Length: 111
Length: 117
Image 1: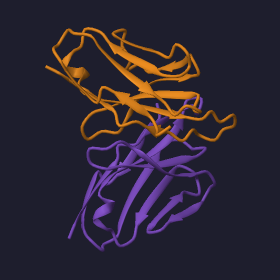
Image 2: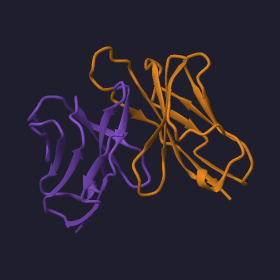
Image 3: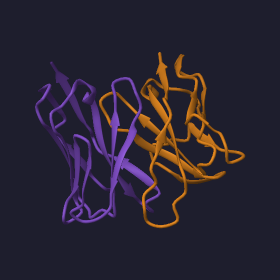
């Protein structure tokens, strides 16, 4: 089946430092989504990427879809404590009617 | 409509008992999904409905698990003869149906946390 690896599993940064998480698929993707889950919360949709090489920005967050559509990254510039949580990539699988979630990257930000 | 609602939020039960969770999706969403999440892991797909039809079930869903969406609105997930390994957060999500290849964007509920003693 489809394998969805995210690295790193965990990262601890000081506020103001940058952060990047990577998502790698064993297959070519039609699209990819990113979700954020705060501690004790539920996953919340952030963005969807569709085109090869696509780059989208949301304030301090930059999302990129690889040229081969097999990987994606999420970069946060100048992290804040509000960025704390686990970031998941999610890939359409099977008939594309369901999403398979990555293993997640847990981000901890301290002052 | 304030989003996806799940009930109960927490359930503690003894091994061997049956439990049922309810999910009320966003009213205009005709797709409804159940996921299971254990500590430190990503959500794992269990099953999904389009309207009242259950279109796919994961192999994770043993015969002790059953899900229904009788009128295409709310859904229930029942676990019979619970085992300690069933302890997890059960997440419900809904999405509008997209007819082309674009993936569905999921709106999750707050989840129902199950603890089996």
